[in-house]
Length: 161
Ligand SMILES: [Zn+2]
Image 1 (cartoon, rainbow, N blue to C red):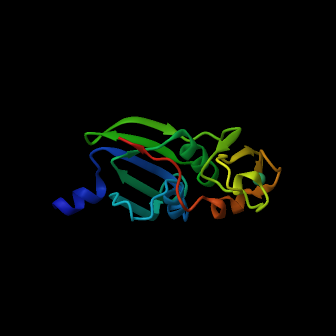
Image 2 (image 1 turned 45 degrees about the vertical axis):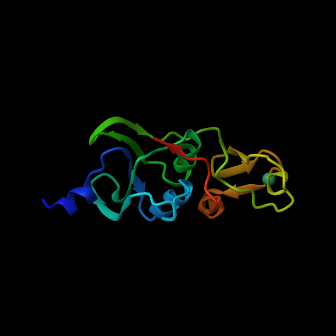
């Protein structure tokens, strides 16, 4: 195997988000606030054959671990995802995402009059419903299939290694 192939398939330190629902890899990157401008080393596999789910996406991010808020939002758009923490090429931790009762930050409220969209230092908060999320401030509901459209493009806090 060449050096280049190695770099694509393995990362030294960082996070591999595996078993991502096929088609959601770019939304996962949006949750992480990664658009390439930060210089992160990222590899993405899309529609990779997977025995369990048929097809999956895989996102590998070098030098970065995920915050709880990021994991919470990923659980909404990729409920089968597993988060693998890599240190020195070894998987030191492997967790399946779990659906939580609420998510804070990262998502934006679609209601322009919501206090979270005003010039106030208020972090968004949503209660997780069976088929979507509800803004804790104004009760606006975002349906599950629309959640990915309400990811804050500016990105949320980063957890650097
Ligand atoms: Zn709101």
